[in-house]
Length: 525
Picture: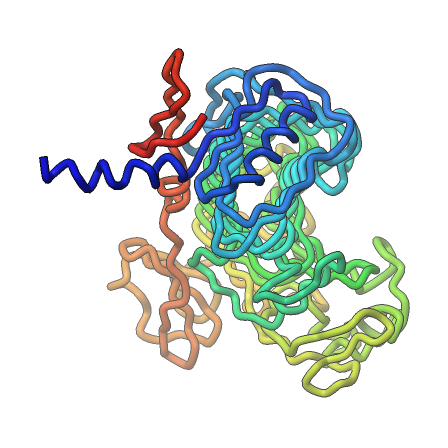
């Protein structure tokens, strides 16, 4: 009997712990009522359950959570491992009629999970049908179906400094509609910076890469069907891995890294893109690359790309006014280079302005602060080049089959790397790429590009900046000094640990009772 006493003593505390709050329907008012009830007696681990049904929302659900919460629908079409196929049925479906239906703010040290819901965007939602912001490092968005129907609409958006994982989701769009299924803006509040309502990302650009760690928003095991994968800005940090990107017609299926626009917000800071499958129909002259980068550091490896114009397109928008009109300092960033500039924000080592602020292949620099026209480098208190480190792009171990009609001559199409600005971006300086068809010619000897093989085969000599992927240790080594190889990057644990630890089992309801037994914990229904 004495062995049962601790459990009996624990029983009252279990009854006062986490609880499940079930909305009476999927309507916005019913869900809002369930959220309010949960918040009135909130505990870490609470579940807000949304039952089956199809509902249209005409106003936004906005909530700040200071506890760990799961919002759980009855189920939705989701993706299988690697995003290779889909499974399930849309049981809980919410249609966005307002242009942003769910806006949730998280708290550092707390988790948020959204699972088992279909979200349909029937109106323009540039800020995301679902917008998750705040400072949580344990956000999980999984097993959902997100349908983005409007041009330039966003399905899922990450703001603040949130990190975590989006996994096993099915993102679908009509053919040839320009969409952002996921938008990454999670450098806004990086390292605790107070940039609420003012998306800047300065602190993200004053920090190192953190490659191979949990300091990113991960998107893995998702399927993206038509539309575009997404976009990034405001010092964003993200990882795309083990996803499938499918197109039924030629046109979309691209991921964009935004550079500096004509606004104050900073460019995308760092990304890893690996072990994804990008596929378009076999049509001659497919019109876009799989990935476009205008800023920051990138590791792009192990992807399979079929029937795209190119793989990684590198460019920089501040070189001219083709995309944005930049105001001169101090009211804007100005233009990089002497053609329309120069600007004191750039290093200006040549007439093109090299190196330009936040350009591809650049990383950590001095912290900038304040809005235009008071923006300054905090080290010098002036408008000056913030000493951004050379942080090259590395591209290796990718399999590429160009769109029909491209020869692979790398004169503008049919290349692994499409360099749209050779005055600013130089092979084996700002980016390093693999050898083989559509990439570097010849073979790897440690003087250029990125080689790969067993660690025992790494050359004894090397030139600074060159990379080597050791297939047996799954590690990228970079030559950091003449004939000196240094471990640079090892991928983060896959699957993401949050898919294992932030995944409460579905509740088991007992008919005629008032309690729910979930994962060994007694909670109130």
